[in-house]
Image (cartoon, rainbow, N blue to C red):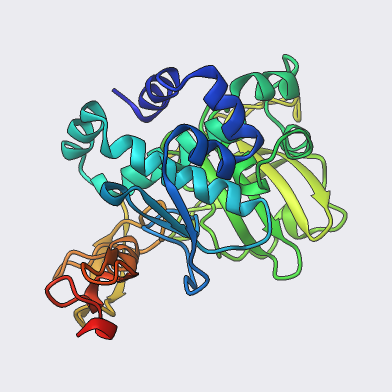
Amino acid sequence: MTTPRHVDRLLAAIPAEAKRDLADSPEVGIQLHFSLTIEAAPSFASRGNGGWCDGSSITDAGIILYRPTSSRRENFTLLHELAHHLIANDDACLNWLADRPEPLRELEQLCDCLAAALLIPRQLIDTALAGRPPSATTLDDLYGSSQGSRSACAVALAQRLPCDGFVALVDTTTSSIFFSARASDTRPYAWKGDPVPAGHPLRVAPVAEKAVTWWPYPDGEHRQFYLSALAEGDLIYAVFAENDLWNVAKLHFSDVGRPDRGYHGTINCPTCGYSGNTRWWPHDVCGEGTCPKCGECGCDRRARQQRMGRCRICTVSVLEHLLVDDVCPGCR
């Protein structure tokens, strides 16, 4: 089994009416069809359990918590947390994840993909593609025809790339990556927060609609890609593909990438204080490596720090590490 196959299987189990309601209004659809309670949690200051959403969930208590953002981002957050609920009750997913080398990271990827599929249904993507390969214009069309945020649209579009590649949103005010989603296990690819490298075509204004381009590995070596780009306000929509999907060049190179060797670098772990030079691989979500001493990366650290619990006396939701014998500070 793969992530896309699990997404398809989970989608098939949701009634068509429920999927329509979830796409129209995630908040209404979740409460109408899944009997889950949704609570705003303004105290959340960053994304949730390793995914890029601003939420958390207590699936055994039927509660979804999220940080209100007054934007479409809330829609993706709510559906990401619904995905956690669905997966927690699906033995096939749980058994598959238990055998994966990085189950927490792959759980978050699975939730992201399922949320994007619910928010931006397959037929909507088919209409936007209209038989053409995925491009920056497709992302713009998806954003205009759905309730998905630009980041959610990037996740959905990346799943339709027929080759290695990724979809990035570039913040032109900082010349950095606002968000990125990749097809399969493409490497290298742009991590959230990465600066656009000096001399890269995405730093040239006005941005070219099509170009032969590249992206660097962590050690600075380049892998070549083809690029489709579109400027929209302070963002650039950028689709990178290993194959020339948009007839950019007459002569075509073949750069299938190299084996992922990781690279030697220093890890300074804020969890256990370890500091040392070692070979490490950046994780898809946090971009950090796993500490060789305590075994945590940024995803694990955030998951532990933001895990929520419920006081058995007053039933208020608080951070789990604040509970003592399942009692919150206010009731002790």
